[in-house]
Length: 439
Image (tube, rainbow, N blue to C red):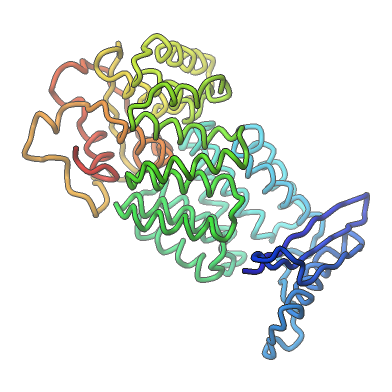
């Protein structure tokens, strides 16, 4: 295997780029060079480095005819620089980072209104603001779709644009064929574009092909072995595939890369809960106060406390979230729902029933691939099961395929959880028929 490694340093209007071509097996450099250019020549430097690497690998591309290998997507270096800043903050996947990313992407578009990548970044940021529970789906996803469609209109050959639209089709529209089509198109344009592989993995989870989801994430991790999100979500997919030992190993490796990565801690805690190792689950979440925020990772704290018998702690988490909501800040109903699931019908004073429909579709049904949950067994069908698998589904589908960003049409009802009536209803049947085999 051959790897490309490099650094970019900027001082005023000058760029210094250091690039290395490394043999992964021996660790030796096959080629290296440094480039110092004016920042306005960034695209020329990209093409120059690409040609040097091709030459070092002795790849003959006779048909290229001297055309640029790196096709600029904007003629404005300023717009390109703003776009890179936007992607940097977007990848932080927290509220501050996402809001800063919005500013950078908008500024990039102001510099170049035909910059398709900037529109794609804008779409992704709107989507994430809702997917992580910072803003309502009703506000964010329509804006995301407008930006994604604009990106495609400007340049339909970019994998980023197709992935942006595929994300919306999957997590908001529930249009499984459209999501699959967009992700496959993105990968046909660039087979190494890891976001498309990541979200195609979620698509496979949605339609019940968990082993295929694991394969998607293994392929993505092989392309970018140091990515925290790809390593974490590979652990997630192994968890959903019930390969718990493999999930523990994978998530431990992820935390070895960055011990402060909250998403990995939350995923690891849920594996421990599934294995009935509550002490270890609590240890993973201990002191992680950043999770007590109005987004779905808060459910990790509350669910772990409830499922492990610490009802007071789970209740305090609920009270914190309700206080945030009373201050006028958005709190995803899926976060609250997940905590009630952890409490089961023993500690929840206000049990719930969540009805969810995709936008404009009141006849929504689970995607194909899994049968209904024990349709012939009314007791099992109606009981709200206190099952880590359900919460695993809530977490691992990013509370989107089940409950979260589709809450634009969600209605929450509170009734008695102790009754064996319709407490589980469509919510439980949908989650379990999607990713959980009946237990």
